[in-house]
Length: 140
Image (cartoon, rainbow, N blue to C red; front, side, top):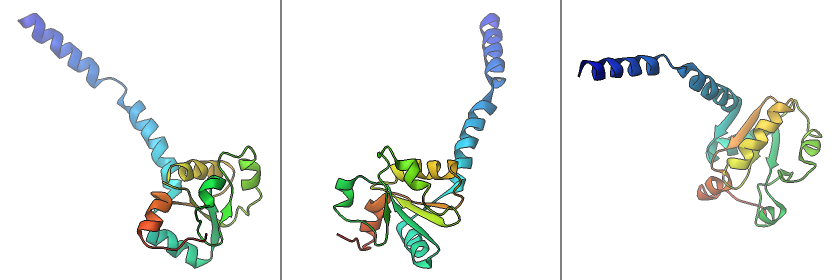
């Protein structure tokens, strides 16, 4: 019985010394990226758009865009092979308000924007689904 308790104590000691900082480090890196891309709900996203300080960026496919988009949006399909080239044609000193259908691709696009020198990136959290639930209009 003493051997089992001793073995258990050793296992617990080893586990407590395992590199937990590695897990925190990787999550910290993710949080750092997320902190640079500000996620906004539909109301805050709409307010940013109405400020007139930035570019509205729709990263959905042409088929999705045909169902409706936010007025004055620049449309660049994230799946297009020239996506990064087209992004780099946008002025980097402007805020970018990026959205997709659900908020997933727009986060990916936001990371690409940051990697390419854009500094003020805002993501429509939950995408156009949230926008439409909030009753905001789309251009069709």
